[in-house]
Image (cartoon, rainbow, N blue to C red):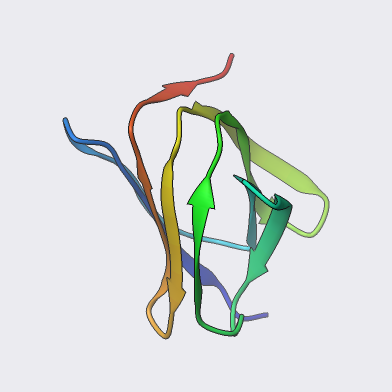
Length: 88
């Protein structure tokens, strides 16, 4: 199973840089999931919950993000968030 490289960055610091199974991002046009090999694109991120999956059915983290941008390219997924807070 291929892994997706995921990075979450805020103006203050790099919050996450890890290989994951999938990330579901709150986009302005609706939530979207990104797996390894996803087609390249960019999206505006709305305030909401970003969900990280370490396996097909395993949620390894939930992070509340406050706006920003997401970019998917050959290196993986990068989310540039205005602010982010880990959920308990």
